[in-house]
Length: 344
Image (tube, rainbow, N blue to C red; front, side):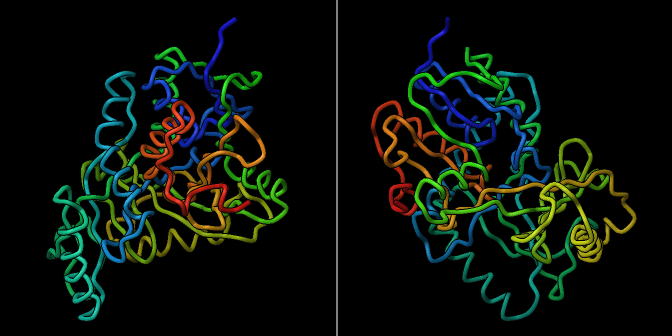
């Protein structure tokens, strides 16, 4: 019978990233999830890898920046290993500038990006042009090159395959072996809350849609609080809602129809594009609004990697790296604001 150094509970983006990073350090891993790969929020359709604003810098923004840079090597590596697409593209992002005040703020943020992004990405003000651009009252757009995008389902599928090709096990059932990392999304936050005797987070419902529109290779757009992602397969994903109250976490409804209508208004190229798919699911949001990482207090040998919410795919490369360092070597590079122990 095979033995393992690490068991990861949860086959979403955090769990698979931790598994892959542990393997990179020589560990034998198994990933266990009763629902299979990407059964929860990681099976969504949007996949915006978008940074925080380059201002008021803090450990969370710095962590995310590092992770977005790490993604530039991780996802091409996974594709080369497996021969499978992940949908990863470093195509940047365009955002409309509403008025003179917003224009002045955008220029100030360009200065912040020049310093904080270390010359690895840029934040520029450009003229709106072409049909793949959000409507802008000033005729100007922000174009940043730190943003990227990915296809969540394709990426998790490819990453799971990579884990298997490196000798890891992906299973729906298996007993714990070695250190145990709990990356179980919304259900995991509920379990933590019960263990701590107070809420540490919850599942937030999101709804998204796919349009049949080929804009492969073009930047993602951000308009009217919506992400619009031109995927490699000739679709455009639009999302999402943020719902704390709902009857059915996986049902789409009038709130998604509003998202679709707003997207068509913001980007005329979508006006006649048919909607080919709709998605709804729960995304794990920690009370701290940051990922929850580190040892599970009171449970020796058990660890937590949770709370990705809307930025899970963007945070995942560095989440995997710091969790592998902690679990395998006892090296703790986790920001204090992320630590599970701070909630106990």
